[in-house]
Length: 136
Image (tube, rainbow, N blue to C red; front, side, top):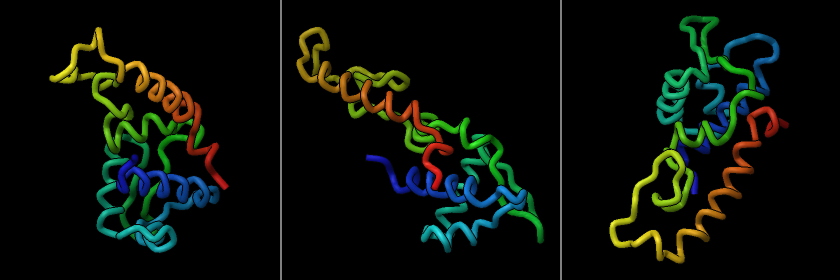
């Protein structure tokens, strides 16, 4: 399950992708209101997205947020890892955050192969889905 933080990040990026075609920056208050995201929580998320270089921001009357990458360059796998960390359901099947299970002998584990298949299927979908593909 993805966190609310990740879900809101996706919603914010989709909103920006759909509404900045005219070249304008968009205030967080607009995104929060239209997408029904708590303002303070959204500010934290947008700062993180800016730190990850997915967004740029400007202050002032013409300020706000803009995408720093094309929507076609923002993959859901990357975004989910930025926001939530591992995508795999078990640490022993994670590609980027592998950690062995303390109570398990991986060579005899019958759970791991099933969750590797789940991981592979999930990654295939998420790796091949971008913000651009999700736009209205």
